Image 1 (tube, rainbow, N blue to C red):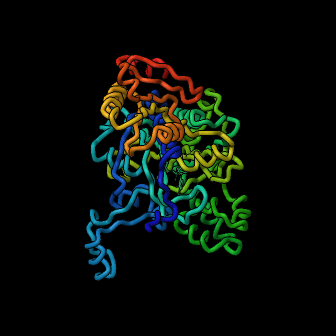
Image 2: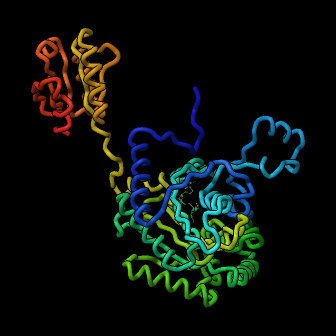
Image 3: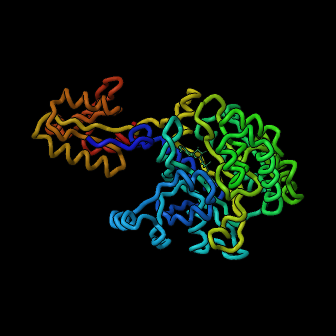
Length: 436
Ligand code: HAM
């Protein structure tokens, strides 16, 4: 028997309804902020992610699922390495949405120079080769937004406000959420800060783990996220970006905070918040549900250099993504039900084979009127049909037997009260609609 791959999930039943609900919330809410939906391919050239997310990130170095056709894989194994591959033959499943959306924006020129910003949202599966555990999957689902062409701190603030509204509409209360923000500086001030952190790590190299020593060379800021307790303790004294921002970045950050204050959004400044993707500049943010034990339920930030890295003209950008599976786990931990009820349904029961054509017509008429309905197609007894109607959660059952056909009526049975009334066949649709 085939089995799904560890760290992947089948979405069905109530869980699927929850995923659809999340997309509905996104469509309505993000729509009011002027965002339109986009879908980019799950497969992209490796270079799109290397340029955007950064060669030194864990996501690119360790977690990206690479894809080869069978024929290409044979050639590759024979050659022993991939140096002969053309860029278009080097493919990967997307580990996140931003790089692909920015690639599409460059390819289709969504933001012509000086043009109107592009505001896009997506709801898609992402793929990361991580060790599966609670809230950490290899295929998971994100809802995200990317706002290209706006450098104003109001855009950062609006994105964060929209994110917090999104969580509220999904069932979280502001009191349960912890929003952390930081500024990571820009090309002006970050390089010198990176050097400082690198030097700090090297000055404490006896107390740091092997991974952090490697990070010092390729991505020193990631040492702030090291899970090793020794490193964590050392990094508490490391230089902070908040003390190393240039004037422009500081002013931008102050303005973002002023907008958040004005909107009454509660946040915690965390100068060690660095995020795991290299493209961020200035504002970054993450949301957690304390004690839910699932990690961040979403995060994002500004990425003013990314469009250029993907081959476009300099264009600022800001966005975020939330993780569907983690949101579901966090709501569950809080005891909030996030599963929309199954849609109500009308069951049309057939007393005997002779009434089958009448039942057939009734079902068609109900569906034509947009009413979800079901009928038996397996030759069950009337009793078994009632049982099935109950199991399906039908609120109403239409019973059609010889007496009904003779009298030109149908029997309507309320499945909860078991009350029965007869209505003329030609008024069935109107009567069912009136009861819904
Ligand atoms: P990220 O922080 O890597 O950011 O992912 C966003 C969210 O996706 C996380 O907060 C988490 O809820 C969920 N997530 C990430 N990895 C996993 C996993 N392995 N299993 C389950 N859920 C996961 C980004 O992806 C950026 N593209 C966000 C962004 C958009 N920044 C700017 N624009």
